[in-house]
Image: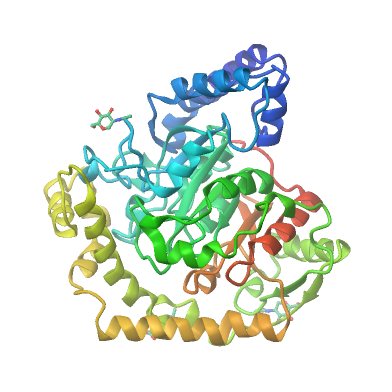
Length: 504
Ligand SMILES: *[C@@H]1O[C@H](CO)[C@@H](O)[C@H](O)[C@H]1NC(C)=O
Ligand SMILES: *[C@@H]1O[C@H](CO)[C@@H](O)[C@H](O)[C@H]1NC(C)=O
Ligand SMILES: *[C@@H]1O[C@H](CO)[C@@H](O)[C@H](O)[C@H]1NC(C)=O
């Protein structure tokens, strides 16, 4: 039923737009169509609204659609006409935002929780201010795993109390991974042009990998966290989730930069932003001469003899053919500790940091039915049926509530993670003169997460059941230019992504 109406809508949309096909269109395709009068932002938004209407009842990728999206589209069209048809960057491009990214408009910002419905933010989050300045259209809020899967790890990925269970558009019976599930599903299923997700540890890379899209997890502080419901100022980062590396880089260019409301981290990272932005690194031959470290032990070895393994082995050959130098079988010191959040100290630090971050966010709100983590825990108990407390619990919330600031244990944990990163990724990359580390999917996300290091996930194949998987390139802080060259070179050489098939 949903599929049939989608077909109808696609036919309708094609006829409305002079043969321009919106489905799978890149930002560059869209600007070409805008500037040759084959497409308007209004037509683009109308197409996506119909896609959402047809597919979202199944996919549950969108929590809310902005009642202002069509007006913003008309404004973008008017501006383009006035400028003589010359749009670029994110002008007139619709964006879907993970529901923990605050917007001061008619959209709610709730992290998927019923407790935050009706809360009012004082102003746009830092990244949304930048998106609006860039002329993009805020299409709506994307569903997520409630509280960035931080209420309880027992909840399935993609689930939240407000929009229900998100679905993987390639195989509807599979989970989409989280926590930025709706952002990834939304772009994968062509419900929007581009989206933003956030990551503490794996929340951009995992859904990107599972839904065959590109995710950039920027260096900590490259993008502002002001006005975002975060877990940890030490790890959280906002980044693009898109269908192509090029689209993701367009979004990255628009959202990076200093923000006085997240001053320390954004000032520190702003020095990494290259003059002229990141688009200059979208080079066809970006792999040439790049030294890539293959982390086999614990990671690629896991897939020995599987369809994944065959795909990765083939990709290694392609990487070499395109001029990359593979440094194989390398190991990160203490990797078994790094990927174990209990052993690394990550779990200890995150629960304490979450309580502080969340309480600070809630206190800043202009209006809110809840003002503290304790209030939210009480809300969840009161509305336990809707919040599925009996099924999924809120064990991490309770653990967070039991913490009392950054004390001795937390300080030691944070020091331990710094040491693990210094003796691990940083030392290895320096010693082997690497440009990037290569791992499959999201299983090594902690290596990058605990050090605030950047990474880019790109579609790498499909399992025998049709579930997508990705390949993840990570590097040192500020190494986005190199990672973009590598990711773009890999993407252009492999072109793995195909649109979803909605298998039951
Ligand atoms: C925000 O939440 C309120 C309360 O549930 C609802 O009435 C309103 O429609 C929501 N806004 C949007 C844009 O969906
Ligand atoms: C995976 O296969 C390779 C090559 O056949 C082998 O060297 C390696 O030991 C295997 N690893 C595991 C974990 O089985
Ligand atoms: C993770 O580390 C903890 C604490 O050191 C240990 O008890 C646990 O067994 C480890 N988990 C795994 C899967 O190795």
